[in-house]
Length: 349
Image (tube, rainbow, N blue to C red; front, side, top):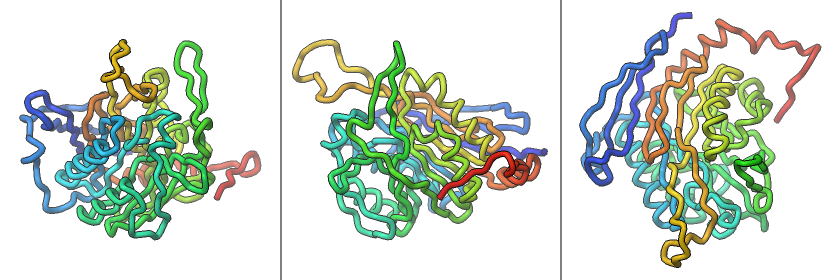
């Protein structure tokens, strides 16, 4: 199968100036080798201003997260502007971008969220996303934020179209309850309630897009429901893998889901924040347990190749998706029509 070039842009924070970005461009050839060169830093105030969206361009926003919600909202706003400035049609925020990733914090930062079809925000986070989606004429997969509903807390992703309307709402279906000896122990179910829907929405040019949140990516059955029953061509997983599971499984799972579903997989992680000082100074002591995110927001092709990624620092990953690759893959290796319904069967809703 002949594979054409994939063009991509990756933006990293530059140390040359405050709030600046150094842009790195790369082209993946048919042999999947990357050649790169670096451009000079561009100030955020004078970043490349696009008057036209680039067809099928996506931006993954690896934002830093603090314990101050207003700071997190401002950061998200600035990164969404950067996505707009590079011509992104679709922007993706990470999991839990308005709050520390801690079970004790979820209730404190939770908001009542709008439902599918709504065009008015119900709290600061949803209002921000809906306002900027309309202002920038850009579809936003709003990572996830803690949602309060009927005395329950959910880990929820809002999908906002370019009219500022909620076109999808995913509540994390699989809760992160793990205890890895010598690694990490975390139990989302102490605070959160699991969602019960497979979420997808349509986007002109990109087709149908499925959404999961972080731990959802570990369940191939969920991804198969999205790609085989709901016919999704792109899967988006805002996530916050940690320093135990991240280096071992983050990229592996993305490539696996891309190959399983013969689709693009996009992931957006929070940037990694440094641990607090080991002292008891009340001025530096944090209210919630520290969580170190792995970072490495990534785009994976239907062939299972990483076509764009970054490190753990704050930044933005931008890629142009060639959607013909989905059909090329599904035609060349037609597993979708080679299932053995006499041996096994996939059901879902």
